[in-house]
Image (cartoon, rainbow, N blue to C red):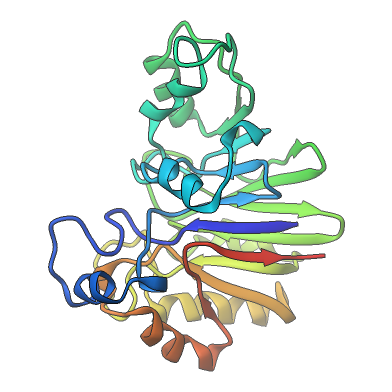
Length: 269
């Protein structure tokens, strides 16, 4: 499996809209890995994970074509992950197609919002539920319950193929005990874990700081869900976390965690 991190920023990206924070100023001045678009990823070149408002620019930057998609998988319905208005451009009158060329996998709230926005359009949606599995070609998908958006089944995503396993956990918070119990017996070769709050923990329970992200990683290691050769990479960074990319590297390195960046490619095989 190959995972491409198309975006690794939180809801307002870095540099943030209408903000002159230290981290935003640094990103404007230095560019490179400090510039973060809204979080999403591409698995194996054809399974898109989330659809943020930056996706058009992310695909142009990487030289990708969304016509290669076989599936679009959503984690939850916050607007930085679910830009419902952009779905229309894959169908008539914007193209010659009369049906969506890929399958959408999404929770009940996202399905409701898509059907309300496009009531007559031929869009195939598979409603996903935490702790149930779905087959996406050669890839097995198992969503797990995140501790994030309380009014819907917010999901983190497990992907399995050819004996390798990825856990993509953005917008997660610290999992409730049913999720921890479900993860008993799993072993992840790659963990993508949000670190939204960086050095500055916020009151909202639905995101992780460096401190709480490390606590999640430690618990996964203690229960053998992460092994000695597992790769751990962060995503969904906010400028309010008060950490540049270099600062994240310095703070996370003692824990064998790597800060992700836009365009980062990770290969298992």
